[in-house]
Length: 202
Image (cartoon, rainbow, N blue to C red; front, side, top):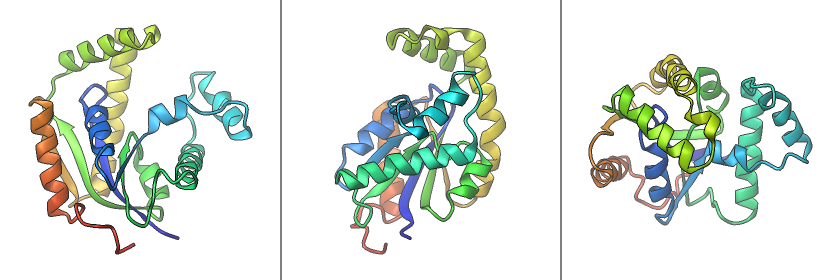
C-alpha cells in the first residue's frame, strides 16, 4: 500500500491552520484535507454516515478507528475523482491525527514529512477568533465560551503525545505573525524537506 506523503498542520482551534491549509491546497501538487469540514459534509444516509451520527448526535467523540475509516473513505473518493493523485501529490492534513492513538493507526497510511505546530497566540485571542467564526458560520452553539474553552483544553491535553510521536519532524511556527509570514515560513520548511519536488519516491 502507498503511504501518502503528508504534511500535518496542528495547533489550537482558531490558530489559523485552516487558513494556511486552504492556501497550500491551491498550490499544484498539494491536496488539503480538513477533517472537520469533511466530516460535516458526510452523507448521513450511508451506513458509515449513520455510525458517525450515532455518536455525534449524542455529543460523544467518534471512536478513533471509525474516524480513520471515515478519513480513508473520503480520501479514496478524492482519489477516485482524480482530485488527489497520491503518486505525485502531497497531502496537507488539518485536524487529523487528533491524538496519539490516531497517529499510530495512521502510521502505515501516511509518510509524515513535517508537522507544523502553530504556537504563539494567547487564549483570549483564540476565544475571540472562535466566537467570531462561529457567529459568522451560524454555529451558535460553538460560540459559547465554555464550549470553546473545552475544545482548547482538549487540544492541550491531546496534542503533546502526538508531537512526541513525530519527534524530529515538528516545526514550530509563530501563528501571531501575519498570514503571509506564516505561509512564508511553511513554504520554506516544505522546500527544505524536499516537498517542492515531484513526489516520485512513492
